Image 1 (tube, rainbow, N blue to C red):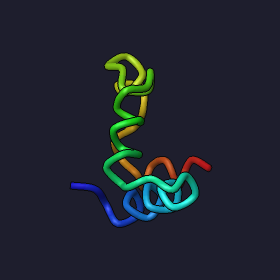
Image 2: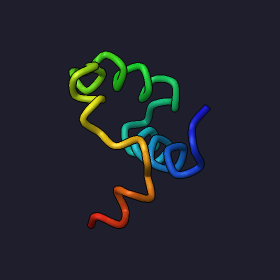
Image 3: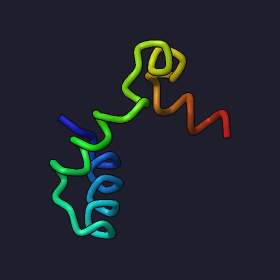
Amino acid sequence: MLTPTAVEKVDKIAEQMRLTRSEVLERLIRTECLDLDLLSKISGNISEQKNSR
């Protein structure tokens, strides 16, 4: 399940690319960003990320 913010971001990209939400997510999953080392470096706490900006 995606957060409302994630849905908005994915939908915005999908609209611009004329794709479905599923197609955008499929493309994202196939990229290098779905990497254990990279994902482990990203904080899971969204509020921490906002406060650090």
